[in-house]
Image (cartoon, rainbow, N blue to C red; front, side, top):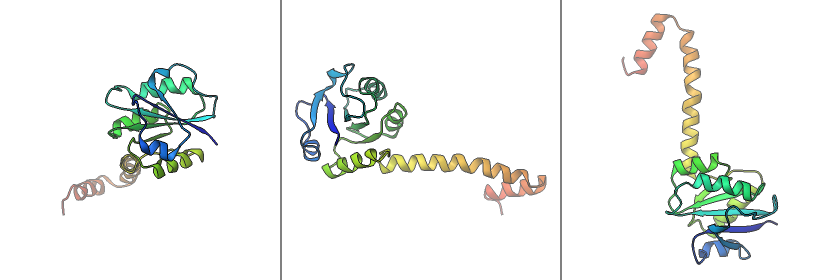
Length: 162
């Protein structure tokens, strides 16, 4: 069973953290840059608040301080752009700091089984972007099979013409 380390600027951990992981270690962000755990030994929960201007940079620093440890970013106000940035930097999860204890344990389970945790809004945005990206080449390929006149008519119909 993994240890849990919550990195935060808070003096007191949130009750949902303690409820989910009673034995978790709570540390201040000032430990960044020091070795936090042996590879794969702990799960790191990084709380980013309004004072953290570049969460992705913190994720990069933590990836060096705790190699091989899964890293979940907990944010005060979830934003898609921030979520994408921290996931791209190597985080294995992104969620609200106010996630209830049961959800925190669910996040842990997903990540322990090799998954990635993101909220439903960000997941929807990613899937929509992927669907749009995939639809374009297929539509272009189909249009190329049409005669010039058929292509003209198809494009006009797609634009709303009768």
